[in-house]
Amino acid sequence: MTQQFSMPPREGWAAVYCRLSKEDDDRAARESESIRNQRALLTDWAAAHGYRVYKVYTDEDYSGIDRDRPGFNAMLADAEAGRFEVILAKTQSRFTRDMELVERYLHGLFPEWGVRFIAVLDHVDTCDPAGKKARQINGLINEWYLEDLSGNVRAVLDHKRRSGRYIASFALYGYQKDPQDHNRLVPDPQAAEVVRQIFGWYLQGWGVGKIARALNEDAVPPPSVYRAMREHRAPPDPAPLWSKPTVRRILSTRTYAGDMEQGRVRKLNYKSKRMVRLPREAWTVVPDTHEAIVPRGEFEAVQERLAAKGKAATNGEAHLLAGLVYCGLCGGKMELTGTAGRRYYRCRTAQKSRAACGGQKYVLEKVVLDELDKYTERKEAREAVRKIVVWPGEGRRIVVEWMSGNDVPRRPERRQPCPGNT
Image (cartoon, rainbow, N blue to C red; front, side, top):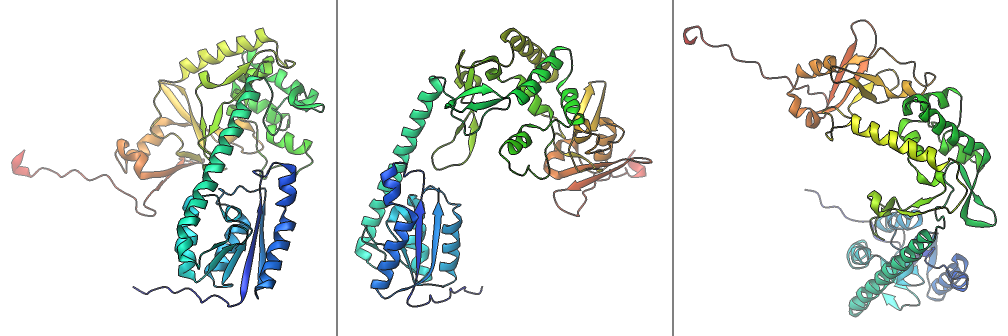
């Protein structure tokens, strides 16, 4: 095994790291911690101590716990490449508030790379072995601060939710933020009319798939595209379409009846970006906080129909091939529909818009399963199959792609009994 060696760092060169985040929410604090002030302090310190500045790395509006800071990661890559011998930061917390990163870099990788870390105002210097415990205590205090701050922010937001104040960064589709009070919603006339149409169609007996298809055929911009247009931004590429989940989410959101419904999801913790869905009983609902787009009686009638549809549509078990069958024409997923006696797959994209996918004849579930049976036991399909692609045309072609790449498993052939043993 060949041992890997880092390049020796360039002597006399320093990297300057500056960070400003929303943690510094006090105006006076933001002024004193500004990127400009940090840069001036650190470049002056470098010059006074005989260092030339290789580069100034900056991250603005990034938390000290965030590991995906572009400036931070670019600096680490250059440190490993040996482009400088010292990293300068105003304080250790500007570098990171994550105790794990303190240990990984200050006490682990930096010494391996021959890189020294100095926090000017904290008097932190990794060349001082006696200061290791102080750096660890600093790291704990910085992380505790962020944990306390996260708890305080959550408490403030929870209080605003319970008070019926809208706290999301952008308005729910169909509404806009009141120019006089950004925690209050008022109807957006153009989008509100679309919401009313969706509720009206559903009460006329239309399904969510038919509603999504009608909106796409009428070229009505879906919520994400409409918001981009309102904000004078380029729409997402490729442009999304109205879908059954989007329509169903609108139909089930109580905010359209004038009650503020928030808190459906919550961040796992202050160190994670993962969001977890909360049970309905944990949501925050405050009645009569703003103008309704849909009459309350109409909203309740829709909820009754949705509940009845949901009970009829599921037995609580995921289908064997759920999410594995794709349309060969557009690459989109195919969905299973129909009754127990005659179930079939159809292209989900074609159901939304014929312009996006011309579609193909429906393929019976039995045809797909029979093709799968040629190769593997059904009970092993989810572990063995990456995707099943259905192509239209004469004889219909079904291609099974396996987790193991080009190796196509075959069902073991049954051994024929010896003539004398029958």
